[in-house]
Picture 1 (cartoon, rainbow, N blue to C red):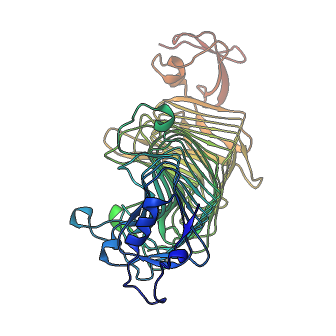
Picture 2: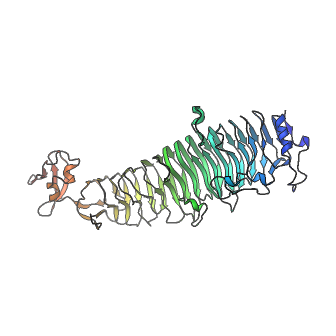
Length: 562
């Protein structure tokens, strides 16, 4: 049987009564009944705690809990300490705007409504206003099976710290966060609207508890939280159907050190240039961020960079203090209506990054990245349509790595360069359409391989060409659009509306150490080379060995590498 606060006349003396404390009276109710109804306005100068398994605290439209006193600036009003506890339809406010921005060691803490410290607890149908951390399950207790369903979190108070300022923050596993709405109080610097993180305590040996699995679905977030949706350390999770309405100051959604996660959300990114929330952390800004490392993560979100917004569509980044590999697939669709300098993908090197069926329109660099020996970037079925201010794909900085592009479109309009690729080890492009003013690909110091085959020019006005730059041992560089084929494995085959001015010389065909003779030589392999009269002729190989002869198609000339 339920007991209500009104039946015991537990209530404030009026709306401006912030001195009467009802903590003891309500705690006594919790000590003796499993179901209490808060149907009056009450003040709490201390935290109330559950006393039984399956205990229920339910609110009504006339009920409300409010924190009073400095002690409540650093803790939640309710602690759920027993399994299967429920908070239903409760209204909580914070009219005194109690909060703390002090370090924990200096007595700082998280003001809020609910602190989950038990398994299988439920918070449903509640309305919480002006809370620093409305609902939290912290890392002290590894809460499993929490359900946060259908709540409103209005005007969450940010205090400019990275350990508080959230609507919902759950360190635990088996969590479901569904159908909620969160907003950040205007003019404050919030942390995260909806946050799921793996606990820092050690595993307890129960696989179903230790998996860190989380479901975050159908939530809406608005306002100046640094992130709207964040997974951190989550394994086996889904983040689907969430909508970032605008206002995120760092990222609309973020995935940090996650494994086996699927994400499919809608992000409206509105952060203006010069917005500096959390600047001391030096974040890169963008709609989507994948940080530190990722394994078997698949992101299929849609992004609108709103007018006046500044940042990237997708950021892939690492921490200097956290080691790990990035292995993930992106299937995003993005449109830029913001700053013309916004880039679609801002990438650090990744061990296995697949851009599959991505669409990006209106950005400067569609892909901007640096490389490393371990970098492996694959594009398939992507449509990248730039705004004409920069190369569509720019890989610059670092050395080594692989870039493979299949069945994609890279269109930069009137910009000279569809792609600018520097110091990669291998580049392989097949079946891809190029739109640019002059060059399909601008290359520099490719280490091992460049293949472009079955590609085509999107425009009929004139042919595109290739450009190659080389840095010598003294550091001097040269750039050419014609001449000898660079000393790498080089294939230019069956391209339409794209010309190559690079042709093999007789000296290269005759050299036993030239790449044309030492790498992937095969019987019948055909190349074009200039003959002794400096005229182009076709030659084919008679064998697979480096010293196998090259014979002209009319059989009038045989070249033997020595």
